[in-house]
Every structure is written in structure tokens, then in C-alpha cells.
Image 1: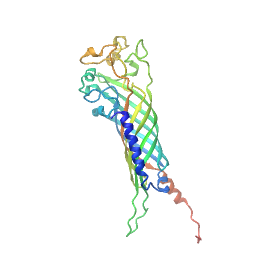
Image 2: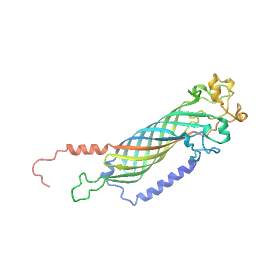
Image 3: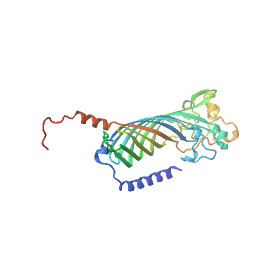
Length: 314
């Protein structure tokens, strides 16, 4: 599935669920307004789609078909969600994770012969808009009286989201059981004569995806979010343009990481293609736990309210 197909699918989901939600009871004012503010914590997996690794086939740009499952890594998220409308919320999130890729894990002959690999920390801050397609939010009775069936709490949601953010990255590769930072080595001749242009270890990102959640009582929710993050950098994996003359690089480590090919080495001579110019992307699949802090404030207000003494005239 490429990026165009993904956007078409998300647009279809928005239309379908919007049409469906018009025919459902989309909460009372009290129910949704008691779910305005959430603190979020999440953890899960990341996958990278760039120039390195991939399936045992020629790479497909921005496609789930090229995901390399052995290169799955981790992600951790903290966030704050503010819901300002029954259908809309905004979420601020901070993600720390890692992505990696390794040509040695694929049997596709060109990439396997090229033999490049990397890992990189990702530190990402983003702001997004959540579009709530479906919600079932009800607060049951606080006490279940004998002989009465108490109403149950409900907090189910399905939502789409998209936003903008920024991400710091710092690719590394291993030689003799030691990890080296690749940016200072200028493996594609960055800043040198006829080399690639110098870049910063930072990129703007566009996160988008889908999530669902369910309630665990009045205060807690648990859910899952699948995110696709488009970037505007092609150097998260330190691979983008063509091979540079390794003899012009400053150190033995730079020369090795520039071209560690293990076979068919004539394919990887200076000036030959090292990567492509498609921008990098990555995915998150997170389990997200949310703490409702709006209801806590509401309950505190109710407990602190002083009722009038004596007989009251209704």
C-alpha cells in the first residue's frame, strides 16, 4: 500500500464513519464534556521504511509491503489530549524510539551485496488533530443498589488523526563490536568537492493514523494507535545519493561505512547509486493508556459544593 492509497483509504473511512455517526446517539453534553482532558502514556513498536533492509524483493516506496519485521524496534510515548468538541480533540505527544535497518537481513541480491546497516534514536514532538468518528460514552450509577441493575460505564472511541511535528535523529553503524556515529564521518562526501550537501539531524514530520480505545471504569482508558510518520529527510539511515570515493574520506571508519559491500563490488563504485532520493518514513504501533483528569476535577467540585441548610423550597 503506497502513500496515495493510504490517504484514499483514510478519506474513505472518514466519510463512512461520519455518515454512520449521524445516525447514532453521539453522547450527551455531560458525557463528552467529562472526557475533555487525558494524560497519555504509550509503548510499542516502530518500523522504518528507507533505503536499507526490507523484504526479499526490490523495494517499494512508502509501502507496507517492504516492512522488514526482524528490524522492528521500540517506541515510548507521553502525551496530553484536550477534547474541545464532541467530534474533535487535539493531542500533544512526545515520542522516544529507535529505528533500524540491515541489508544483511534481506535476500534481495543488490541490497544483500551492498551490506549497509544502521540504527538511530528518534526523539519526536508533535501536535495533531483527532477526528472522532464514533464514540459511546456513558457514566453508570456510582452505587449499585440491591435489586437494581446498575448502568455500566462506557468509553469507546474510534478516531483518525493527523498533525505536524519535528524529529531529531542520529544514525549509527557497527564495526568490530563498536557503534560509530555516522553523521561526522560524511560517508557520502557531505560538504566535500562533488559530494552530497550537508544536512541537519532534524526533520519536520507529518504523523497520521487511526486509533481506538475503550474504557476501564470512569478514570482509565486503554487503546491502540497505528501511526504513519512522513519525514522530509533522506538521511535518517545515512543513505541517500551515490557512492563517494572512499580514498578521499578522512578515516578508515568513514571509508568502511561508505562502502562495506561484500560481493558484486563493481556495482558499488564511486558515482554509482547508493540509495534513492525518496524521503524516509517510519511507523508506530502503540498500546496507549489514558487517565481521565476531567472527571476527577468534576467529582472534586461536587464534593466541595455546600448545600443550603434547612428546608429548601423547590
